[in-house]
Length: 269
Image (cartoon, rainbow, N blue to C red; front, side, top):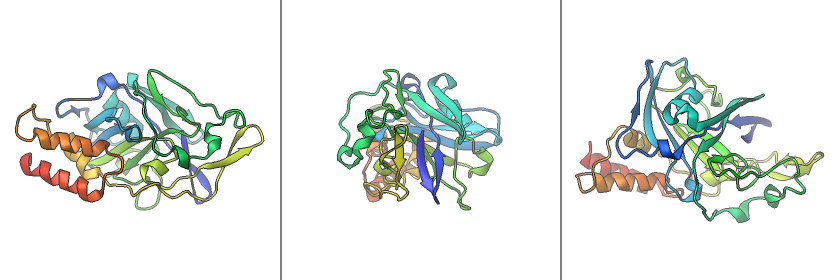
């Protein structure tokens, strides 16, 4: 679970989990259920340089259901490790066998995040079957945005318990794994600067700036979720693959994303 401080209050950005074997469709994938709200869901691990755990899919549910319900429908309930806390429901892990990777921002992470001797109540875990919170360092975990923001127009923060009725129709629920409270996703975040009594992190009350400029991929994700992937060699295949590569490119520019989307729309309107 990643904690982010807003207006001097910690707000939990909830987490989800999923199975690699169930999630990389080679064609347009739609999960249907009775209901009135349609959303698009994906699960990304772009900080690893690897393809998403879940490519974008479309989910339709009754709008009394929640963000967590939509995520479970998209990935399969057996592929998600969800829990409850005083902050509400959250997801601790997505089922996945993540390959080894080189993390680009290690030098920008406080050393205490790797020091389980000083921060002895902030464990670092390892799970060969899931990509789980607190893997690789003590502050890693899953975050999500809705249409590239973590709050609505009234500044109510989204959580896994947020009802779909509070989301716009066609909203993009984008889950992303972070090892820096969102700073490595192009968001500002709160990082620890030491420990307090009991071996727990002492969290900064001032935000750390994003490590790079974030790109809005809402329209790209919607297009991938609603468009069948052509067969290799067919019209639009190369453009679709370019769009998939743009999705997993962590630091791609907005101009490049928009150009890739324009190219895909031109051949697969």
